[in-house]
Length: 364
Image 1 (cartoon, one colour):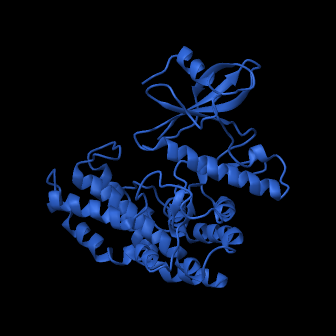
Image 2 (tube, rainbow, N blue to C red):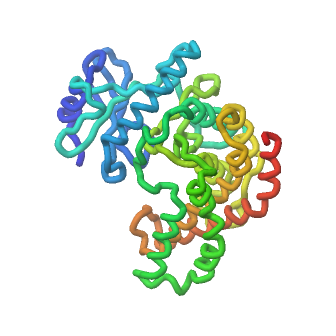
Image 3 (cartoon, helix red, strand yellow):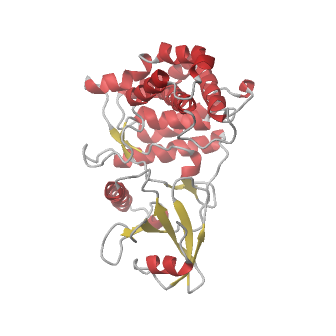
């Protein structure tokens, strides 16, 4: 539902802004929430207004409470370290005039945060940026490592639960709702061959050998803001911050950042793991995260890359078998192309597993 300028100004009036809001224009390229930059009557852009996508984040109370707990915790850690310019190093969300964490206008949920000035983000992943990203996400997890288990909720239940994703896959294969199964039987066999090995983290959790920690769950380089010198300011896009396994977070970066091809590359020769990107990220990450990780977690971090790539292969494949009901597609075979590209990356990660596992031994 599109809002008029008057409606947007009414929404902004529910928050204690400095000055009066005069405009709110679309900002950034996010796919989930609607994001607008807010200009006040002094001509400055100081705020970001977001409409929360409550179809994806169905429990807005939990979502905003998670973000409040995490940003408050980080702020206290930065203050204790004597950091300067803290408003640029952690996101600051404004409560409403009534002290609530969001405003509901009758059909949509809204929040306001401070715009982090003189900041930029990057799309391209280089070894240098990968190292900085490792520092950023390692620091992020390290600062949140002492939040007691059970404090945060799962904003998207079972988001990185491999057993759940395989259950969805098996249901799709059994139903074959649009008759696509016959043409992809070989790929189904490849998924099944790896299924047991890809559910190790859930098994280890039940055995008490892996614990759930506070994860970002969307560890892409464009979810980090950098200053004018290219140094990390802070991690952003906190909607998926929730309990999970650290293997997921490093795995998601390997899957997205250390891929020499595109996520939907039709030319599979382009798709391989970029080892220098992985190694640079691991160096940065371990510099900040080693203090709270167990030896088992450290040794399994490269497995996280294989796991998340397998998981995304399964998710694209499930959607293809189901008739493309979840992911947006740009042509009829798009989800199958994505599936094959992710599977090729998985094969490359498997071929390089010994090297990647060996690289982590320096921290054991």
